[in-house]
Length: 401
Image 1 (cartoon, rainbow, N blue to C red):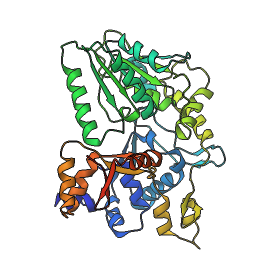
Image 2: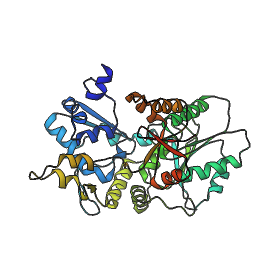
Image 3: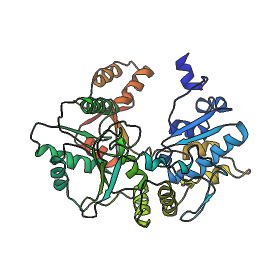
């Protein structure tokens, strides 16, 4: 019964992802649509609302307004870095038509950002190279360093390991690790942090720890990024408020490394365009940041290629003369699916691959293998193939022995 409930949402409480929910709203196939009637008269809670992609915001907001207006759905957005989604918001080319009214549950007059202050935020404008960062990490007893790319995380971690005294616990986290490996490493980090053996703990990670990961460090470093990412990173610093003084969060630049193009670059530029703030944690600072951020975004309804032509969701669905549901289903994707999913060697993955070789094509095996897969871009994938390191079985790619 519970297995069926995950497919049709016929249960009082359903936990799912933003991606699953929103893509289902624009789906055209029965398997994805048949659960949507159960959303009526419900409360939908969006955790980490700042992660809703800017280039998809218009169709997201339009869908949610429709469910609110016609199906009695209430919406609750929760995050430490709340996006501004109310009213008309000026964009780079077109405006965002937001919600007519959003009510704050916690009034600004409560001033909780000040009463619960746990972190001192500092911006370092002097660029550091990988070796500088590794050496500075060695000077900290417990520190979390968050960077923008898997390459940066790998470069810093390799240098940190090279100068390690062998007495500390050093960890690396990135999406080049499969989900099972990430979960295992995160559990190891949390366990180490809870112990009172005073062992040095240093972690280098990509942004994956910024939301939904409960860990607490006295010092957090964050490579330059948007204000929402910086404040999310600061949320891993003195998280439980146990320090006698404020925790320390520092924003730094990596020498010769620009912020990746696209949303990350738009977000960082939006922060740089803001005037100096007396308090970066104040709600007004976040409102100002998202105002600048929306000005950076080229579109709130990104066009995608469908059957050889490019369309926005508005072009596909908003005209009564052409309601192209199948095309909209293909075009509306919250996560860029370009790339190749490859199963790596970890825990039971080899045994599951062997079952596929023996023609055991049970769907549960594919689901279990998802926890052992990483996503490779086309360049890296072709390099692995050229080196003879990737094989295929039953439509699934995996690393060869």
